[in-house]
Length: 426
Image (tube, rainbow, N blue to C red; front, side, top):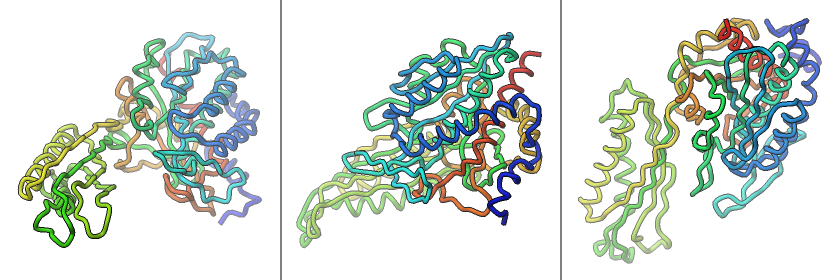
């Protein structure tokens, strides 16, 4: 275990992180304390999707202080900054998400969130339980670094601060899809886009990368199974939607195990079952909700088709009926192979070859995929766990990212952007 007083020495000795005369290193050294303070403020006062008003104001104010051209109100609360270098070159984009989650924080951080709000008619805590405060702060740091290098910057950097990555509130649009609809790529369309995500399975100083398929498509289904209500003592007079629902949940698992190739990754999960009002009443209907995760569009089609057939067969057999609302959400995130391989030497130079981990695809989703479907994209993972400490997983009350990961994140992304601009300008 590394002793606390040796921690920052450890960071400085990570291969590639030794601070010298490099202009990126100098700029990080100058701005890091400010970025840490901004991170604390963003973390302590989190906001849910499409409601990131204070966060957006903080972001816009910092960008303006750097002399960066700023547009606000994109997709409700999104902020876009444009930094034009003094040398000709391509346009590259970097993206950070700003929204938090309806989770009550249970960490011992001095700047922990105590914010509460109303979400889906319930009072909930609000927490950056997925590290979006780190994403936003790192990108503010990258803006600080590259703005200080404007004279020698060969091209233009578009800083996209996105709302509602975790999904907009019900009956609202939001996120990457709405930013594109509102023209975020119409003016100065980038030739590539970069993004990062915190990873509680990686230590500070480590990076993770998946070339090609990296994160799954995310679909949501909502089902109403309808039957006939009756007294619980007279089940023969009912058409029991609870029995039908239990049959459906079990049968859905055969989609993965019997309808799809075992070599095709997929997940079918029922996350909500609601039905009934009283112990001795068989209800009229049952509500189910869940998610489907896939990589292959044909598999996506097959899952929806099989769900319809299973619902049709079971409800017909029992004399009931159903309604299925299948919402196709975020597509699969595919890291552009050519771009990813091109940037590996940069990442290895920054953190050292042994600290760049090639990681497996996951079934989680990310709407960075929507941007990456428009232009070549690369999305990598940032280690956030200080050696000798632990963190809960993302989306849990005990998730925590150490401040020291900010320096690694800023240095990595700044070098990626600069190296990309230089290589594309040759």
